Image (cartoon, rainbow over all chains, first blue to last red; front, top):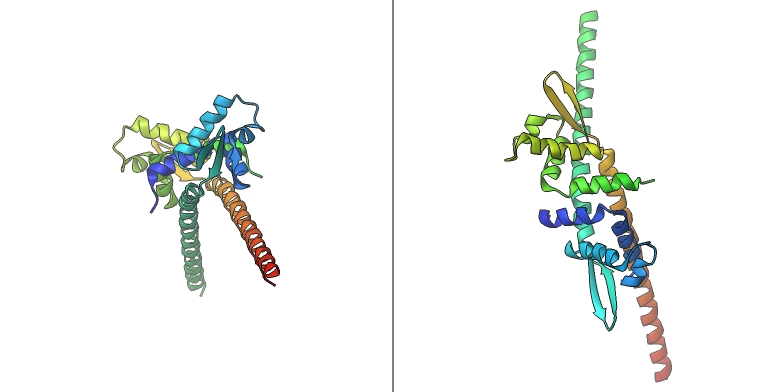
Length: 119
Length: 119
């Protein structure tokens, strides 16, 4: 069962290239905030703001040990976001299959009618 | 190759329950704006605004014939959104597999060392 409020937050979080890059980085393993910030020409507060969005929707969790805050990916949010899209794609393909069956039936029946008229 | 600007727009569009419901409805086939509006307690301008967001990112296309505007789903945007998430999930599973192999190797080597010490 999908939690639609959570889905709002996860898609909102993924609607930004910097945050998607952070997720891609965290797939490789946990990272400190400064490691996550390194590839971006961005102030630390801006990076922290992006991390907050990822934390709010539960995609990323972080822990502070001494002066270092380490972030790690929490994959269940990605799974929910994938699940909704896969459901839609699968429903779309079912509809195309049904349309295909309908069109074939129509074309066979039209062919029969044409033959009927010709004989 | 994923278009990241488009991906921003598609995830942004999906970050709203009303717009996701409209996508779900359009999966079943094209619909007029008033058909799409029916399930929501919402003014027509509000519905049009949601449709504009879906149109801007290319998830939905519409055509006006006489006084009726008919909307249909354009599935390539959903495919891109699915594709990015599936890539991440697959990279995540690869990392878990590698971690699993590493941990098994460590445990085998620790076992060997223990045996070595015991004999």
